[in-house]
Image 1: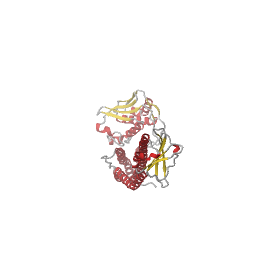
Image 2 (image 1 turned 180 degrees about the horizontal axis):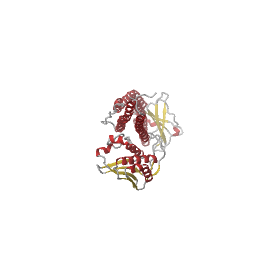
Image 3 (image 1 turned 45 degrees about the vertical axis):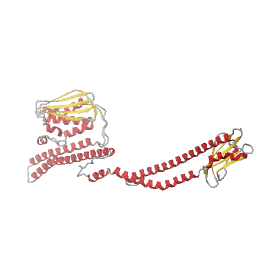
Image 4 (image 1 turned 180 degrees about the vertical axis):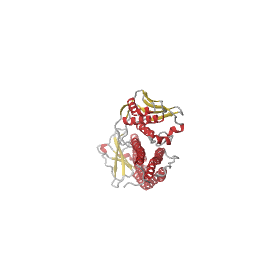
Length: 470
């Protein structure tokens, strides 16, 4: 079962890796020590056998003159772990000289000796390890002697045993030290996550103002903290906008509902002639129509802001759509003697009905705020990959402090006049959402007493409508 705490999992992982590494290094050191001891033993035998070979070639040893071999004995006698045996020529292979106490005979056939030195590893009956070098030596008189030089490696075995024993004693302590260090490193490395835990415990729908401090955070956690802080900022902004939208919506719906209730109560307070009832019903119908428009605009705005499923974009001619919208508003324009002029040609990829809705909202506002006997210009232009549809009209203009807030929901420059004109305060917010869906934007320029221009700015690419929540 895996540990539940991340620090425990990291500590265990680092400890296991450290333990494996410690075991690997211990085994590697053991193998290196064995190899080095073997090399030293081989070099020792090779050097000593070379000295013996040189002495035999110069002295001419004979069985009856064994006392002359004291120089050969001296080469071996100082080494308690060495044994030397010399054999005479074939076919008798008489033993000429023996130096040292060798426990056991090496499992060798001296007839296999050759001019090149050969090595043989073997063990005695007592379990001791030996390394034997044997070689055929040519004397100055032409005869041949076979030399067997054996090295008792009990000291090497003892050294290896001591290494294993000390390793077995020290290794648990090393592993405990590694595990403790791994736990400390994991705790220290994850201590920065306490900030994330603390902020997460404080965040709620009522308070989204808490942020993670970026001081002394590692680079990886700093990037994560930046992402979480940005997410909290967006959530905070969204909750504030939702709260403001709810307040504005309650305010917008309260007025017509209050009017309906007041008129109904006054009308029912006493008997009235049918004409008065008819007039009250007509007023109530107008108020209900306004409520219906608000609800309809809200539903459309929600659909555009969070589209669950939209039809694929198509190529849309802005000139044709502008003409269609102008025909719809031609009667309203004629009542105020306002001329509608359309110029320019361009097409974009988008949703035809939504683009119509955006142009319709801009043109409706323009007609509402344009003085009589004037003209409204709808200009379409294309520059590289940018396509713009601009609706410009003369009028009172919009003060600069209102321009950044025009596209907020229910925002009105003149609240009383907008309600009298039948506006809901959602038209420009709908335009902004439609342009956002088309990967474009809406802009406004206005001067007091001059020209007001609203621009729909498209990128003439091939945008793909979203298929899920944004």
